[in-house]
Image (cartoon, rainbow, N blue to C red):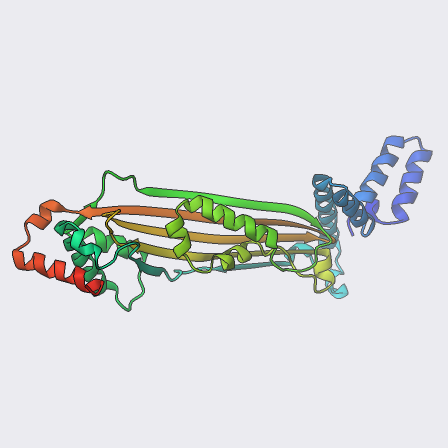
Length: 325
């Protein structure tokens, strides 16, 4: 395992010989390397450093130990016959790729059929015509965010509201830590709560936040901190990486009396957990990548004016029928 400086007894004889010949600095370096690279001794040293709060030194000891371990294993011609392997090969990586199914939801906010009588005709036409187009294109089908915005942009009765600023932002929440003697792969409830706080603050929109289902499930995936110990190999070294697009969610809020415009939102979240263990000490890095898009649409009065009277009446009737008026 590594060079002679990491081998018990051998390193001590080497250090003694160095001291006898007057190489006191060499003797000191030999023993210093021994307590940082020797099996068991280095792990006790690392654990003590971690428990005392010196996490950077604990991690550095683990890196030096693992470097010596890999060097020793790679240089031994009889490794295979002994059933040993390079501990750095013990890496599990799971990435769930491909298009994540978009959850698509319509919301009517404070809109009620009694309110329709108080609304401007242009708003009613916009509601009826837009809902009709959405139903024709997407009812019973899987849909992407690009298809939703493409459909809305092609609807001539509405246009992007230039008076309201659209939202396009990204943020990443990173969490990490060195956890001594952690042996399971369960979710950290404290981290789950932190993630939900980040999620809420990032969206900064109570209506949109409340409409999103299974927020706790997302938080638990990101907060799953731990590579389980299931054998000698994992006691020495194990690394697990899990990546997944957890949410891809679109929400269309229809106009109401107080907010006479469409609000079209999309939230996409990707979770990643990387857990690395060197003997008794585990380092966890967890993060959530969040993307938020919000667009606003209002009546396109110029196009609505071009509609025939029957076309306008049809759109108004559709809006009334939508809420059972």
